[in-house]
Image (cartoon, rainbow, N blue to C red; front, top):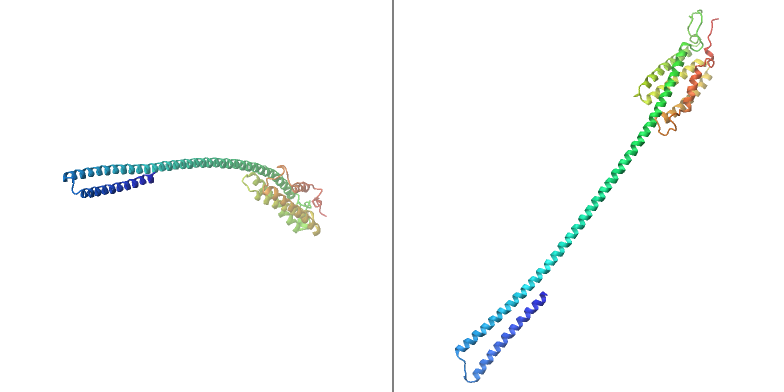
Length: 320
């Protein structure tokens, strides 16, 4: 539209120039005709001035009209340009508002998703912690049950070991001399006179077994005692008891070697079973009432050691 207005202005400017040219030509032609007439009807100076004034007035009116038209055309161009810019500004602001609204909607959706994700994470963490606490409690109950059962069996072993060591101390292998004679007094151990090294081995081993059994009983009354200390003390107690048994029941090297081999195999198996089931307190124990077969074998062995018919050297001896 602005190009159309500019075209109109240019066209009117050309028309004005054309009219000016025509007026000049008419004036020149009129002057020439007056001169050709030889001075006939020659206009006066006043008439010429009046015509010039009228002509100037007409030109001024025409000029004012053209300026008015140009001003109107310029105003139209300005209004058109302003209207176009205003529409562009309105469209841009509307687009910016839509973009801001879209961004706010996306931010709100992201925040909602983040809150939902955090909530899910917290729920999963809570469930995981609950499961972990539940599993730890179950494991702790299994371990506590296994530890209580182990303490019961250790108390039984320690009680049997104390009774065996006490009985063996009062009635040593080979019995006691019943009368005086030959540089010995009645009531002294026969084994001390016949084989002093065997007697000393039996005596100290039996004494260590008796003392360590009492230590085990004392440790079992203390709930804070470590499992490792109980197991180590029990193994030492049983080893001392077995050494005392070997020293009191065998008189030749071959029998001693055989008993030592059997006892070593039993101790190794017993220690392995305790390492898997009791020392580490493995939660995969099939039953809290379970005890390794080696434990039952050792308990039977302890009962057997109290049978006087097994130990042939315990028969009392007389002088002569």
